[in-house]
Image (cartoon, rainbow, N blue to C red):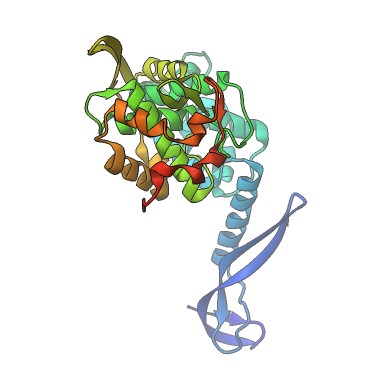
Length: 340
């Protein structure tokens, strides 16, 4: 690429470099790295509309992330999720076409518009908008959008049911009893699904121990739990606090079913997987922790896992129903000699 260099006062060949930028956006100082075009002779930055626009868009998106707003790319992803053109999305919302175009090019949306756009990731919101009168969609656009939203909802029904549950649950700040992570019902349900799809004849008591081991192992190694679940001391060993209620949420969402089964002299719940959830929710370290727990403890019976947990001071030194702090994780003998 050849452009006029003001410093050299001549046409020069340019090269691309990454340099540090600082911009103030709505009173907020944004620092970031971005590509620039540089004169190969004097090394000065040469003004280029393409590079300038890309840097400005990057700065705006960093600001959006800091302020909890959708980025321009996320808005494009939202529109394409339903196969909508910019014009069709504008018609659905009753906005001007130029508004959608500007947001996708990088102009920062206000919070009211952001909330509307963010709500559309839920296909039920799209279906509700289609049920009202007054949108400017053509009959063909409306029918295509209805089919697509219904298809997405059927595929993601469990996720959105769990999202409803999450809104009803109390929000607890990260602390020593949830492993420094806010409880996330979707993460919990996905963890349950992860084990249920890999362990045959998974009984409730065994699942409780596998979840406890995974959360405490991850906290031991990385200082944070995977699910944000609190664990209580129960007669058969540590188990998620309010475990029955949490499992019922997963069952209502269609992630699992609880099947009564006979185990010798007593009747208990067997966990059967139904709708698999997106396991990419977990990062590589979390997945590796699950795999380690499955490899080392997956073949143990519920009785054996209970016996092992009864040897731990974290269980012995507490009364039934008392929460077990994650600070006990480094002291657990059950992990001695273990490796990732």
